Image 1 (tube, rainbow, N blue to C red):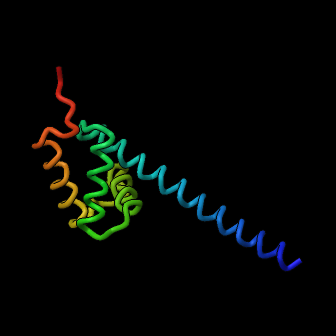
Image 2: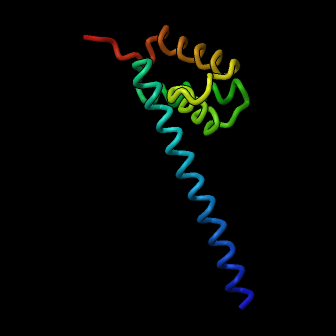
Image 3: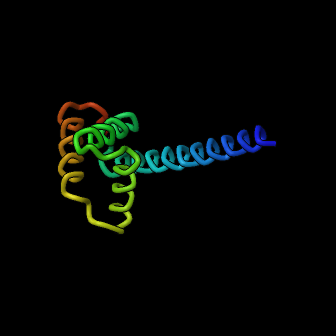
Length: 104
């Protein structure tokens, strides 16, 4: 029975980790959608912006995504380090033309 209990415990832990990963992925996708809608950039550029902010602030990607979502929903102000890095990353994308959807 101990072998089965170990397998069940391992599978329950794996299911929990997979659920967290799916939720985290969904939040990142939502934050990308915010950047696409607000700043008119391509989704791939939105992901790169979030990734850059995460790297430059040493904040996990899913946490940066949650911060962007909470900000756009008016639940919290954008923290200064995230705001500064977000603006810098967006500026790099927009100034370089990378991901900018120019009106026809």
